Length: 356
Image 1: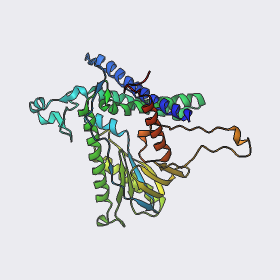
Image 2: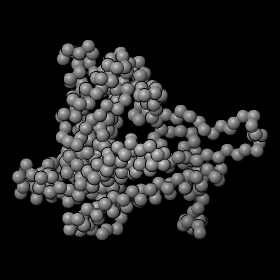
Image 3: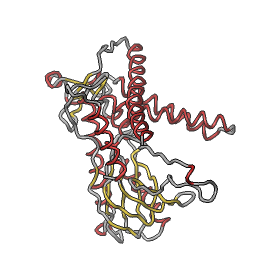
Image 4: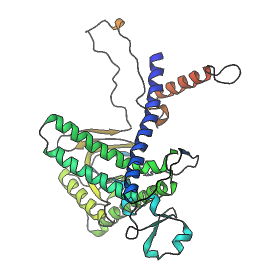
């Protein structure tokens, strides 16, 4: 039992350290790009805010079992693309008074009511950083596809993943509750644009692929989660569903400005939608496999039978992430929470202060 508790504490510490490392990556890139433009980045202590803002939202799932192919379309690098497209940066943020003195063609107003200079007047540092990261990842993935040496493949794959993680971190860097350069005007605007894009995608797909336009069935977006939408076109065969998904992705992309791009990701057939962030389906790619999210499908705490006396074995477990990060209530997670609370309360001395 003690080993379980230690594993939980280490996991929480790892999460904190990882968050700090990712912030260091972004601030280092900001220093580098600011230096090129002779700009000064303020040296601030970590800023802490209790102010909340709504993160990514999802289209309410139409729960149920779908015997027909369900197509998933995915926005490529959604948040980095939004920041590039709308030039969202510390260096482009405008005070409303300053915006009122400019030509409306020179700035944009985000869904949250914030103002940012457009790129033809001043290109933001964050968009420049993101363009470099995405281009570097694209080059590295090309090198990975051409690599023949196994070690070279591992290095290239690790490198392209590092570019991906860093690009996705930039948005979180601007909205981190304990942040080095907190700017909720940016993070709020990014998520708000994301909501709009998801809603607009739903409207475009359901508006175009309808019986009224000559199609056999009405397409229905059964779920949308952050950067993906799941669509039931009512098609019965796999090749036609894939072709329709690719066509729909190109159609939706044409309604947005570059570099925003909606891509065909996969088809699940059949598909079980349980609730938000909880679904499963038979994924059809080069090989078919079960694709799941938010569902525990494998238990790894069983011992191999008839190979060793079970009385000689000790099974210990730990959570793979902090207890607060589990959305659904699960017995072992609730137990971990209670154990943590007991441990913290036992550290409080009689005087009401933590005991040494």
